[in-house]
Image (tube, rainbow, N blue to C red; front, side):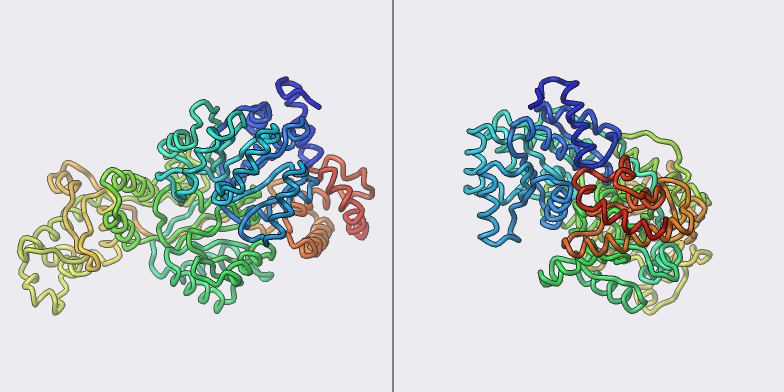
Length: 630
């Protein structure tokens, strides 16, 4: 039994677990310090990007503390699918783990409760609403009295904050943990939290004395591309075909839409175009939804079309793209959702099409919500940050990281860096547009929508324009030199900078807002990017199907054939175990095997991702598969 008060000895114990159980030779980034701190009983708030290895920050301490006789670690997780896969991965690695959630029968739940009481579990995953039931709390009380609770890990901790992008009221009740289970260390983890959300997490979970560990938010393997929305479905299909398809099929990806109806429409369109696409939203039959999610996790090249409810905690490493057909609510949501691409560290794309109506819709949802003025103002600020990211002509990554308080330099790998947009002074056209909105309201006594305003600007004598006499206004035809697309791009930017306000749903009438005065008086400049849907240069991000290799030089033909054979063997094992293939071995591990071509079990030593249990379980089979290529 180790003394977990001894820092050096604890660090060595953590490294032993990392190597023996998970097959990794060294921790990444701040993991080593986090793992040591939590293993020694310290509270922690961990902010680490998706794919950065958050789960290792509580799984290793859980095993270390269990080996030191401290009992079971309880992991609070909001998603059934995530619990199932993480427990499956731990079991594959030789760790005794289980979950308690609504997917279990009464007999199954009772069996796990008995294992818990007998001290047979190292980690127990539980949903927050299950944890807070009298039955579960009573079980944990008993373990606490026996000093057999090693730690609490609160995953997706941003769910506790009203300022976060995925607030869940039941997370607030987790404040009971330090009061009821005094002395049991707690670690809260999230991939996304700005300063306001971090402060809320600390207050709500009573983590004032906890150490905060903030990793870089940068995901350098993700390329950010934003295009002006024209025909979003057609643009999406072109993007997938150009960037993520070849003769053998297409990459796995996620497409986010705002409504359930839109999810089903887009999934059907992609299916009819020959893509392996599936819908996911809360209105689907539960069995069908689960089947679709299982296919996404277990099959290659599945595209999930979903509302934003999908994806939190999804651990699929080879998602090569995330696409948004509608503007997210805030920059945290955008970061969290795009972060589901490229968890394996290989090149991935975050692509979004957005337009004027997206801005209008998001503004209206905030204005029409029953929330108080202070809360609405925070939401407007978060939306403004996302709009600034969408409209910027500078490096997307610099703007994104700046929001989270991180300074950086131009990345050279976003659309603006690869193809810098041309800008022009649009102050005079902006004044024309603002003046037209003002003159129309002055003449009519009420406001009109964007389409009508643009008809007046462009000098179009429609029936509506003639009926209201708007063809006699001084602003009639002053914008005839611009097309509707240009005016809509300018209007979108004026809404983003709060020079124009959209009111009176469902008519979406335009009114001048506070920011208009400075532009009309000539005290503020408007710079507009020349809109063009540009294909990013492909030299920096070759697709996975083009043999992108981030963990070594390109494989030879023989190595590639060996890798493919290993993938086929892994798929069969995964089906037999009812687990996603990456739970058995990640692609990076299979590539390392294909390159080394081991002729014996000892040749597997030192390959990242092969712990002792997996080597014992699969080593002989792996050597046999490879033998055909030696």
